[in-house]
Image (cartoon, rainbow, N blue to C red; front, side, top):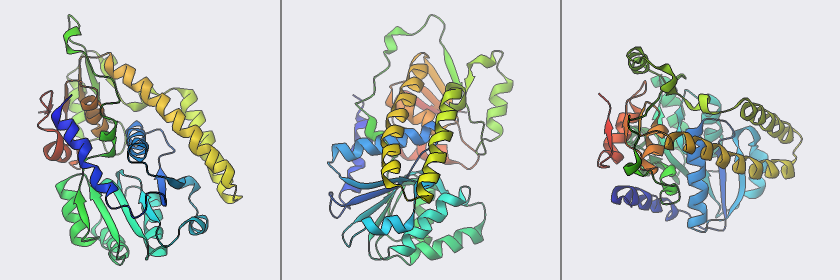
Length: 323
């Protein structure tokens, strides 16, 4: 077992210490989509609930979130948890608005934002959002890096804490790479972003590769049936939300969680077939660390990855910052 990874997992206990009543908790914005990094956070969060015996009375993806339904479940001592990740800011406005609605609607409840990285491309958007958050008297924000911590503490809430990502709760549950069984020729996976957070680094790395087959992103591991299933469940969630079919939304919770674990297992098998990972995906890096896989992490477009590495993972002996 790696002492650094054990320590990172233990640091998540500070979240549990803030929950008022572990039998009276709601959890919003779990990822009903196919970003596998978010699914790793989701799996880690659910493992966290199991490990600390936290009873979630209501789970909702943002597609199925309804503020009026939430009011029926949220009592004076209910602790509200919002999913962690890297979507705090104005790149994902629908999800940010959901959080803003929560802090405005439930000013008397403790609200905990699970570990996030924040990014606003526009200062006015940041100040507008911060004004809403800062009015809540019992808001607790967990940040995954110093830059996010400083932004949140200065503008959003004085109750701001540094914390590693929720996926670290999976350490000790996932298998470990046997480094004694490396291939005669080292197999390297270049796991590089292809979405809105990509930077010039991905293009520079790819331009120097003779074999593009070793370049993948989450979407290259996922199957067409995954996309169809996610789209079907997402649409069903929205319809169930419109029709106030809580039992349908509850069933979707269970179905999607099991499906998410299967997707993670498939990605795990791909990662474990390589000897080293070079990645611009934060969760390509975190996943590799959790699996005991040697890896190098390079930055995304706004410094999320290097900030995380410097804060949490640089002491792990089989990982380093890509240069």
